[in-house]
Length: 271
Image 1 (spheres, rainbow, N blue to C red):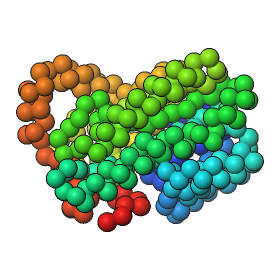
Image 2 (image 1 turned 90 degrees about the vertical axis):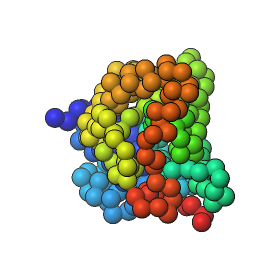
Image 3 (image 1 turned 30 degrees about the vertical axis):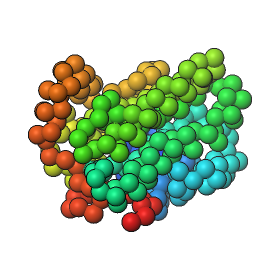
Image 4 (image 1 turned 120 degrees about the vertical axis):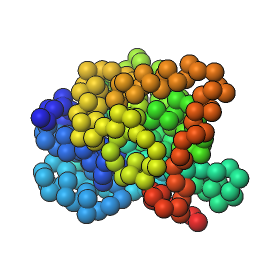
């Protein structure tokens, strides 16, 4: 069953696959005009073909402020200010501080996962605010941002920083008609989790996650956990003494580092 979202003009980054693609499909099916932002043109073209008159394809690096501003100007020149901007683009991967080469991984992960959200929101913020209409700015963080995990320091840091950034922006925009929503997914069946070598409790299909996300944003929920029961589990683990919590996590397999089998691609990574 497809949720009909109460949005008319949406921008979705990371629309090529996984959660972003599922979100784009839901929005298109619901009648929205959708800016499809990503790096894999064939995937974006397949989405745009669903409703060519209501979609446009853009392929900027989300951490490139000038490129994102140009994308926003083109989109708003066609369809006006959006009422929904979803900063979904993100990358993941293992990290080892002892390895000099992994510093580039952390830098690039911060550029995409944290800076990329600000560069996505920035060109739309003033036009959305000036429109006087209700609007939503959505940042896709992660349960990994709630507490650091061994071997995953770069990703956890990027998502923890994102959660704090979204909290700040939410407070700033309280007097306006704009709302800021933090999404904390657990494990979703996407390319980012395909190489994981550990158990993923509560694994959720991307289509179902997209429906729940859009329904939560439409209802005004400021912090959405997908699935909710995994949030409860993470919170319960967080109540354990740090030594015990760390001992449990140290026994789990780690996410593959860049270059290792099963690692996901990090666009723009300078090796």
